[in-house]
Amino acid sequence: LMHGFAMPYSYWWFPWFIAWSGTAFDFGISFLLFYKPTRYLIAFPFAVMFNCMNKMMFNIGVFPIIMMAALILFVEPNSLTYMWAVAFKRYDIARIALRNAAQNHICYATGRRRGAAEIADE
Image (cartoon, rainbow, N blue to C red; front, side, top):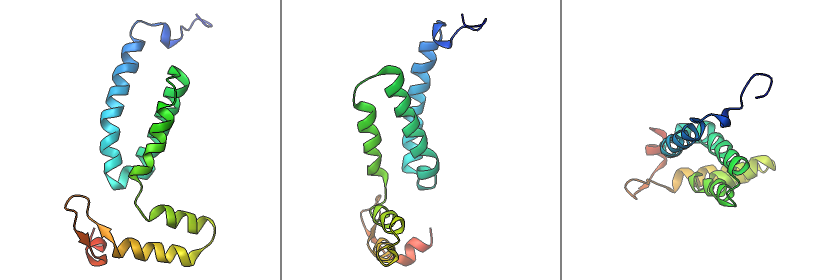
């Protein structure tokens, strides 16, 4: 007891809570990562926080670090070039990255190349 308050991990239900909430998170984060509007503002920060908590609480080796590195798989192809160019004030490269993203976009569902007009309709 700490000043009349027991730490949560001393209760019998706490391991069950951690296990089931981790399972629910793993199930839900995949949908948030695949859905583009929630990917960067919701899914990425929560995935990083979840993996940092796993690293600190359970000390399970390099797995959380590898999972954080695997988030790069969910980044759009030209967005890293665009972010790099904007960060270093290379706006000419940023314009090229945006143009290439619009011209060379491939639909993940069908595998077809889509033009800028179809992308603008989304």
